[in-house]
Length: 260
Ligand code: MF3
Ligand code: CO
Ligand code: CO
Image (cartoon, rainbow, N blue to C red; front, side):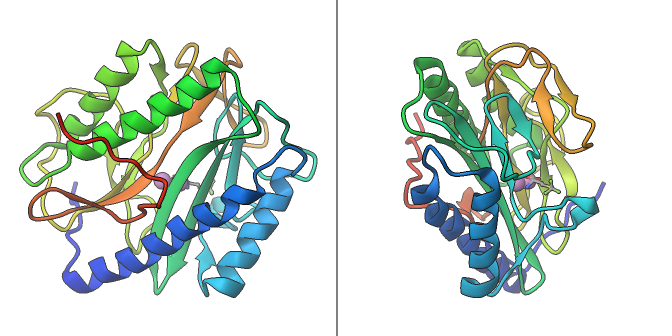
């Protein structure tokens, strides 16, 4: 396995597209209210990407995916297909996952939004998922190992009695959408390749309120929890720097906890 090291020119392009992806998630927030359909969210994002950001929505036609974003509601783990028939209601949680291409480079990020007011479990699941992502990110520095990221996420999620989806993982990213390495959200400290300055990849834990098992729906995209319990996901695109990490898709609502 070879993990690409980006030079400063490539990293600058990753920064630009990462920021566009971040701005898009900030933009969509005000639209996420009871009564809106995920199909409408897709149209808003598509128009924004093309007209306001002069970028390309990477999911559209990617391996046959039919829409510009993924919208995964409640028990949908990931790759939910936006639809006019899926109308959000108060108490739902919805992950909006956007990936943009600008100047040949990809920026990939997602967060789970709460629609209206959610129950205690939904609040806690999304919060623990977000915190697990930040803990994974904080394990990133040159000389650390890829397994350190998964270990940090796994320890925290399991301590909170939630389970981690195994079938999907983070990924290297750059001119290729899903590149090497695979970034697992579980694992052992000190295992896997060593991280080096200039590597770029996503970290995108999916965590379940019930069991870890998932299944693929007949549309060949939508992934759901087997027990139909709630699931949440959070994703950033990260660069390894000389001293640690840079979050290329950082938003103004990101609240990175300080390292203990
Ligand atoms: N954005 C997703 C990820 O985080 C991939 C979506 S692929 C699609 O890797 F085809 F479903 F859009
Ligand atoms: Co991704
Ligand atoms: Co994504």
